[in-house]
Length: 138
Image (cartoon, rainbow, N blue to C red; front, side, top):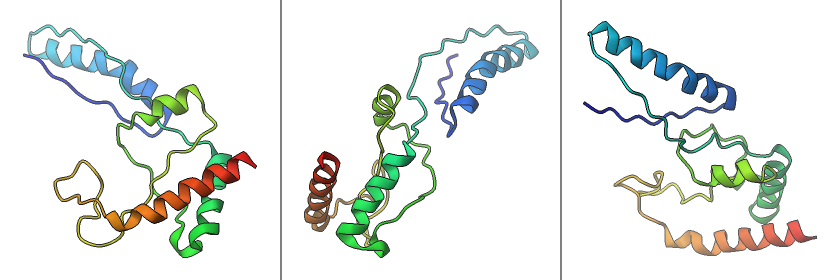
């Protein structure tokens, strides 16, 4: 039998602890049934950690462009397996952020069968990315 799992956490130390403990737990569980387990760890996506200063910077630009009511800060952490985490791991002075899709039907998170991209957000998204680049280069 083969079992695959994805290990996700919001903290680097918690992830390290999980990755260290999982093999012992799996081997002990297998042994309790008289079986043998082989654990192969394939390094997955690291914990995504935003730089606090860059996050504040990105938020200020959003507030300047759209007003405080539309620039949300401090959203709850996501347990996604986001490949941008590799970029932030290599270059920590960055910020992963989400440009909203609105509150209408289809506004759920991506990778969901109910997701429907809102073409109406293209102009605002483009405006934001342009303003963000311009502010960063000043």
